[in-house]
Image (tube, rainbow, N blue to C red):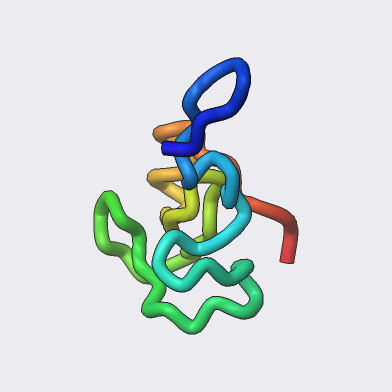
Length: 69
């Protein structure tokens, strides 16, 4: 945890637009991409929490992909 004057903030919240494994933005990430919830490899996108999700899981859970590519 990173402590700020007002609250403790998770390091993931600070680097929210980066892959949680390689800490690279989505276009530069070379990690194997699959949905962390259902393990699908179709329509995978990096979301604000640093993890990859498929379209169905993003829609069902309300995850928002970072940027538009």
